[in-house]
Length: 340
Image (cartoon, rainbow, N blue to C red; front, top):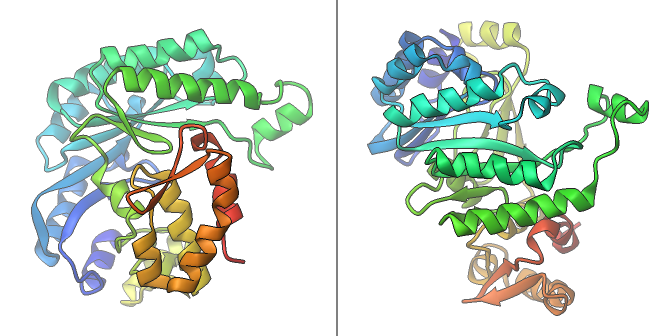
């Protein structure tokens, strides 16, 4: 297996113990139990791994038969991230999802018997999603005892079928005001049910934050294996080629099929701003000064003045944090603070 070969070839790239393992991107749930166990054993044999690492598998409801869920529960995988998106069939059809609302509910009901740590994805801002339907989506999640939600507004990418449908008038344009109302409902209902919004789009009960995603947001190094996978060592970002055939051919020759970008100070500063503002921990002014110098810290303090006045940002314990008002505007606020 090419993935095993890449894992072995790159075993010296990560200098710190492995805390999380994430099977995601594409459809990793299509891997057999034997293949998943082989990949995990390769990691345990070649890398230093902490005791009880968080090991997540991404899956779609239609991939999770009762038999598959039970088999997964007998592996080292201890967290599932399930792409539900909605509990309404008309929304799922609109989003071109392969599963039905009934399959989504059943897979979660069964998975909950074997896994305590389950995250689901939910999409809001779709044209036919009323505020009432959105509340029902959330309530069904709470009733199932799910402890983590990743929730995103629907976006329209150019050159997609949805973009063309809107352009041709087959689908009504997305309503940003409705998406904002959905977001406000999301904040209100998750808070009522003891979820903490620890990142703009991520909500977890205490003890159920995604350790894997949190490591990205805290700027920790990570290693990505497989076609198109990205890696980061603190100063450089690398990514594997997308082409599967070229990827496999390179590994057969003991070559790592990747490109490398050395990140500039401006790139690193801007990433720190973007990621920090999206999280509950915010941007540490001490970290900014230590990593980038007093001049960059003074620049940032000057740039945030207008946002402090607008009450979209605040400073608490020497950290810049988005307020409730600022959370839905975070991308625009961050870009305003970037170094060009």
